[in-house]
Structure formats: C-alpha cells, structure tokens
Amino acid sequence: MTDLEIPFEKDRHGHYRFFEILPGALSYFMLALPIILSLINTTVAAIFAILYLLIIFTRGISGVVRSLHGYHVMRVHQKLPWSDMLAELEKGEVSPLAKRPKWHRAEVVRSKGERPLLMRPSQVVHAVIVTVYKESREVVQPTIESILASKFNMKNVLLILAYEERGGKDTAQMAASLRKAYKKQFKDVLAIKHPSGIKGEIIGKGGNINYAGHKLVDYARKKKIDPLRIMVTTLDADNRPDPNYLNALTYAYVAAPNPIHASYQPVSLYTNNIWDAPALTRVVAVGNSFFNIVTSLRTHALRNFSSHSQPLSGLQQTNFWSGRTVVEDGHQFWRSYFAFDGNYRVLPLHVPIYQDAVMSDSLLKTLKAQFIQLRRWTYGASDVAYVAEMGFYRKNNISRFDLFTKFWRLLEGHITWAIGPILSVVIGSIPAFFNHQSFTANELPLVASRMGQIGVVIGVLALVFTGFRTLPKKPARYKHHRTILMVLQWVYLPITTWLYNPLAAFNSQTRLIFKWYLTKFDVTEKAVVVETAGRRSGLKS
Image (cartoon, rainbow, N blue to C red; front, side, top):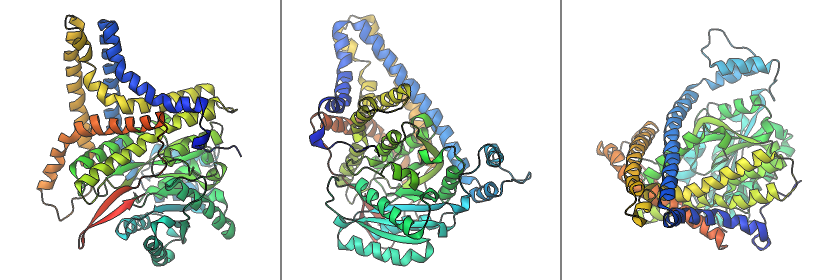
C-alpha cells in the first residue's frame, strides 16, 4: 500500500517546507500588492483593483444564485419518498402512476441493463461512528435518537460510539450506558475506546475514527459481513442526520458509477441550537450553512467536510483516516485521491445533517471557541504541502491537468479566505491614498463603493433568506421578540466576515510559515439548553 501519511514535523524539509510557507507568503504578498502597485503606477493599481473587485462581485452573485438553487434542491430531496424509491430500485420497476423524478426512472432502467446495481439496497449495512470526547449525555443522546428516527431499517444499522480514553471514567460510563440502552434498537451497538498516547498520533478526532475503523474491520470479519456491504458515516457528537439521510446514501451507493472510489457528502447545517446561541455565532453559523449549500452544487470543488460517508472497502484501501492532522475530514479527500491515483470524487447528497452552532457557557468563552473552530478549518492550508508532495514529487498516474487544477483551487481558496474580505473593503481606496491627483484613482473608491453596496445588499438578503428558511421551530421558552433579534443579529456581519474569518486564516497560515504547527485538535466547547434543568455544558469533538 502506498504511504499516504503526512510527514512527521522532523521530516519536513526542502520543497515540503516551501509549500507549507507558500499560502501564507502569497496571502501577505497579496495584501501588500495594491500598495506596491500604487507606488509604481497608480493607473495599474487602479486597474488591478477594479479587476479584483469584479471577480469578487461576480463570485458573490454566483454564490447567491447557487444558494437559492441549492436550497431548493435540498428541500426537494428531503421530501422525496426515498424508501419507496429504494424498493422500486431493488424491484427494477416503477409504477407509471407514481410521481417520481425523471432521474429515478432513468436509474431504474439503467439498473436492468447498462449499469447494474452494486448490490440490492436491502443488503447495505450502515456503520455510523459517533465520536465522543467529554460531551454530556444531553449532547450525545439526541444524536442517537435522530439516527433512530431515520426512515430506514435499523436492523441494518450498526452504531459505534467511538470514545476517548482521555475523556475519563465519566465518558466511558456514559458510552457503556448508552450501549446498553440502545443495543436492541440497532443491528448492534459498539462502544470502542480509543487509547491515549498511540505513537505517531496527534490528539484529535482523526486518531479516534481511524482506530474505530480498524475495529470495525475486525467486527465485520467476525460477523462475516463483506466490507463492500458496509457504508461508514462519521458524526460528531452533536450531528443529527435528516430522517432521509441513510436512504439517500443507500441509493447513491448502490446506483452510482464506481461507488467504491467515492465519498458521499451531505449538507451541513448549523441549526440544532441556533435559537440558543449568541447573535455573533448565529451569524457565523448561518454563513457556514450558506457556504455548504452553495458548495453542494459545485461538484467539481466538493470535498470531504465534517460528517461524511465512505464505503468500508474504500476506507481499507486508504488505511482509513489520518491521525496526524487536525483537519482529518478535508484531508481524507486528498488521502483518497492519491490512494486511487486520481480516480476519486465526492458525490453530493442533497439532504442535511444538522449540527450545533458554537455556544459555550459564557459569551467570552463562546467568542474564543468560535475563533478556535474557524482556525481549525482554515488550517486546511496545511494540505497544500501534502498535495504538492504526493502529486508533484511522488510517482503517480494522475492527470497533470486534473492535479494542477485541484492544487490551484486548494491554494487559491485558502488565500482568498484570508485576504478576500479585507481587500474587498480597502482595495478601492489605496491608489487614491498614494496619488491624490489621479482621476482614475479618485473615481475608483466611488466605483468600489457602488459595487460593494450592491453586493452587500444582495448577499445579506440571501443570507437572511437562508437563515430563516433553515431555522428550526422556535422553542416555547422564547417569546416573539426572539425572532426580531434574529433579524437584528446581522449587524454583526462585518465582524464575522471582515474580522473573524481573515484572522483565523492568517493565524493558520502564519503558523505554517514559522512551524508553529497545530498538534492538538482543540475541542470546540458547546453548551446545551435543557428545558427542565437549565443550561448544561458539553463539548464537541
């Protein structure tokens, strides 16, 4: 098997270090570039600024259009009769009177001829891994209940509580208690303790699910279940899949072409506790949900993120997940991409998995926790060096064009994450600051202002629409004025867009420049409101 692991810190030299430094170096350079150009030639600087603003504006409008379309597609897929469609797929016929999507009828026809099903839908076994660190039962149990609420045969669902030894006795006792309570409602329930201090692992989720994955192979061997039949889904402790998620996943797995060389990505919506979270983190949560809805339609750019699914037979070929990175979800895309010599993709599942917005037991802790979460996500810039190493410096049969475009998209995405919000605000004023006499430079702020105003209005309207349309039912403990606050919260948008995200991105990229690596998965602190017992704290791993 090809060595797919990230090099240890002591083994990162030469070109690997160059590509670790590259995202941060380019981000800082791009911030300085408008100033440099203004000192050389104001007109050139102004042209550069206008082109940059046009690109940002076009992307913004495109994102708005995709968000509206993506929301519509998601709602349509949530309402589809997936159970009936699976039965029809297995039987190989659809009643002419049944109201079904055209693509489903076409798939049933294909399954009888040009592309037979991988297996019958009823043969698929789902292994759902729920990772647990020190989360309270009030956080974990609703996740289990949401899985049970799936419109799927639970006797084909294996629940795995992957808990950390470092979580202590209370976590171990909770896992054992939950296993006992729910064992008869699933095909089986496993409580797997991830030992602390395994050599070569950093403290984090990757090592936990990696360990659980290997134990799942042992279980499948013992029970004589073909790994090809097992679809593995990883969930954080607060993740709650849509009732149709397992059905939609089953359909995609048995019907997709080359299904082993694929991951399956739901839409992550941060709405579980949205009514309880502070206003600032609500804005971040809606923005993240908005981004995930948009990305669900950009299949060429889709990557593993947070909760995702992958067949056990495919995971075995990648030696499961990496235990050496804090961004094991996004990194799994690249790990699989190189394991399968580029013959790998992420398929969108247009049904949601609901997650928590960041919320701790105090405002200050919440603000800090939100930054830590964003910093962990932006640390995906560490994959730039990994992709360069595996793609350009090791022998492979991957298309150079495909590799380069994916590499560029990864690199450019992290640079834009850092500089995009900042430059979009200040770039229009920089040329005029250095040359007050230039007509072009003095007109530029007006142009930038108009474009910015139009973009902001359209963007905010799309975010507000997404926020309200994905909003769960208001808890009885809140009065009508809480809904008003859901509108007023958007005054925080400049802070979340132009401060929080760039600071997190620059923090991650600066760490990579100076080898201040993130060597521990910083658990995002959560608090859950319990109707009868007040507020209790929990942690999300």
